[in-house]
Length: 233
Image 1 (tube, helix red, strand yellow):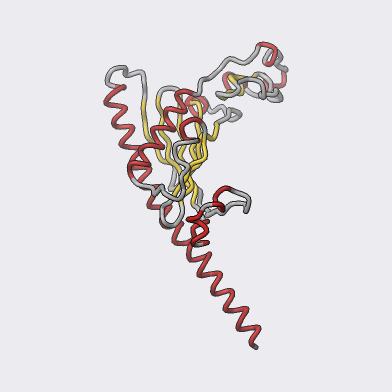
Image 2: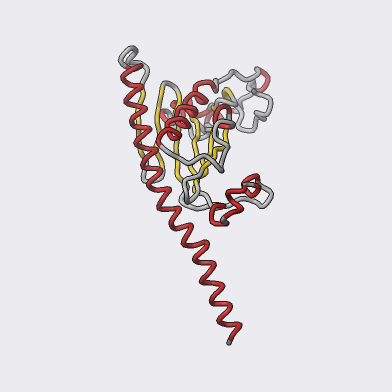
């Protein structure tokens, strides 16, 4: 009987430590993503005023796709911001577990995640289903709004102090601006001629028009679906 009580008590304690923490964090992520979407709308309004009023061909827009996705389009780029519906921890060898802050309370090791992907606007416009987008940043936020960012370029080094960084409006503005700059600096490059010189009849017949060209910033563009893109950049 005592063992049964101990087992039940252990389950209750685990639910308190994990399930309750994760549920609390999920609610926090929902409100945080609402803040992010508000900031994205404000950024689009600002850019429309500063840029689109000068050159109407530079289209800048904001769009939501359900509760977990928001996107901004600027010139030839789209940044896709998505909130993951699950809560995560990290492998025991991850740098997170070396943090004194995390060591003080194991509940601090759980994170919600926002992902930022960069796509070509034409990929959506022309429904090029084989085109590629690139993950340029992941924002991890815990129950106390401590956060860090994994990412490319500015996003990779500006937001990595988990112990001290607490997410606020200024930080949200900063990582949105850094994501836009990263996308604008990430050029669409022409691949080497020998990588794209072959096109099978099947590939051309199977997909017509623009859809037959697999395109992404790292790729430049590809005629062959099997081409190796490892040396393009």
